[in-house]
Length: 162
Image (cartoon, rainbow, N blue to C red; front, top):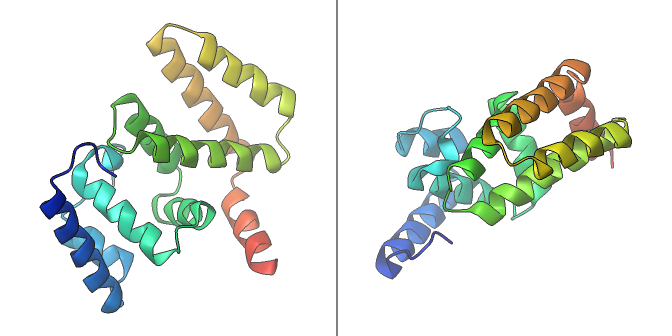
């Protein structure tokens, strides 16, 4: 999954992840063992990507469950973490994009005005100025976080009730 990995190293990592899973290790334990810090650059490091793979392993490769776990663990930092990972060329660009798209979809399903979201996203995609893109994205994130502070709880409740 990581660009041009050493096959032996990749196999050793898979074995370690399986061992932790067999030992029923919590995601927080693995996070600490990998000496990670909760910052916006978590998913640009190889160790961070391995931890994310462990989260996927425990969550049954379900993107929505992984995103909910990340939102519960890192609160309002998740959009910034995903954005930073995509901008800095994280090893798992497709995965970061997929999680970001799910997150935007969740925001739209949380009673966001579709026209407003499309207008803001089209500006972000059409604009060639990176600084302006970052500012617009931060405005979008702040608007969602401020307007829908209870989003995570209501979304989680809906998933558990289904």
